[in-house]
Image (tube, rainbow, N blue to C red; front, top):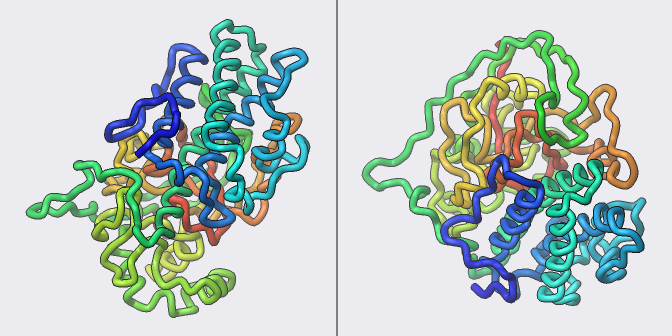
Length: 432
């Protein structure tokens, strides 16, 4: 595929691995920005512009918005009498920062055939040149260096969003094109099919536990402050629910039985005509992936299910979804390895026993709400997380599209309960 002027080589099986501890802020900046371009280099020119639904954004917009962030919140503050690359971009590529100014409507981002992709790449290069020079000279004050760090984690979020949005876009094409070739490691041998570990329930003692970020290093403001909560003794499943297990729910009439569903969930099923997870074939034996249409692997974690579907399955299975506090308590004792974006598998894989990280984001039953004593960031950056703390539910653990260096035990992702286009799955919980 043509890279239409992106000054980055065509990647091999995976984008460049991000170093967990880069030697300097300038190097960290270069690595994250290069990883975004590596993801985009697999796209054809036409892929950059199309928007498949209001919730998704074109790849071109992702490239521009992540550059807008650094220009708006770093360069403008660091450089006296700073002249914006293009004043119109402040409107076009603002997302939701109302205190910065008005923004182009999210559902209309796919109408922006201009500026062209090459013009957006030139904009990105301009921002990179200015900011890289500041980072190399160590001329940024500490508070702006912290904003750069926030901006890099923000860009990693958009790397995952770029992949989920491209996957949805390609799924709408009758040709069902593949974003990447399947990695050999994801293909099970015919003679020795992979089996998911037997599902067992692992006790979580509970009690008065500490929740929230406390370690050194970056975290988002919604992970703070660390505080105590009471967690009743419970049990968490040793792995995520698999395709094969969810298939049993589908074949048992799960989508046609209102008793399994929350009222809003049942109304959504009826309105949207859901009968299976997003990207599953009507025949229930294939699914669409970033590597094209593949045979449904019964042992891989089920993916692209909404909270409503996850909750309905849990009820059908005689279990429930964990709270985010139960999840974090259990994850604090789990290893942090897993199937992340860095693996280049482009798809959820088999889950290891007691694995809590990677493959699929796991829905919890916890509302996305502020922790006691929560304080948003000062100024316009306070709009990053806090104003979304309503009508959303928390997911934990990261996915196969999350950069490994981006995830933490305390990381709180959040989406509305009907969202399905993210790499979201579930893990069951029960009371003792």
